[in-house]
Image 1 (tube, rainbow, N blue to C red):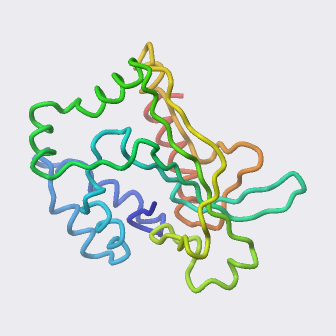
Image 2 (cartoon, rainbow, N blue to C red):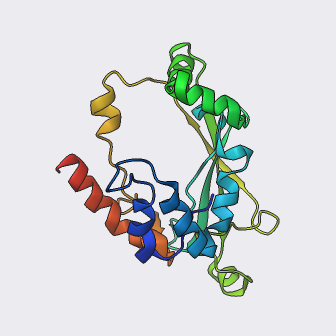
Length: 218
């Protein structure tokens, strides 16, 4: 539900920490931890990542989040801010570190196989889609920055509202064409959903489309 940084100017530098060392081509944890130690706003996401929930037991047993704050416009043209949540209906299940290490070496396709087989057996995984809503007036009064993607909105003040259900009921017949060539860009929003003053989201409006053109050549 959160991200490591709130300033989009740091986004390229953060992404580079996930890459291999340019000299050795080895994975380099020093690059990651150097960045984390220099940016205290990463603490929330790092604690989440290294908690039990950081290693889900496959895709079916993890939640999904929009993370950013978006703006919803209703039929009357009235706007509110919102956050999107996808809560797994299979329940949250996680792996311990030892089991995750074992699977990384013995069966790195564990999570892909689990999802594919469940759908093939018609045990369709689903997620409950919920939103948090904040009015413009509330955004002016809250004690935190509602557009800071390193923070969450307290559910005690902004409860989850059910809006739908998300079901995976078909496996791809051509993985390359249907999955690897997918390009989701936050700049391509449907009518009724708009960007907010979330600075990290605004940075992604540009960076994702640029990366897609480089990756897909289109």
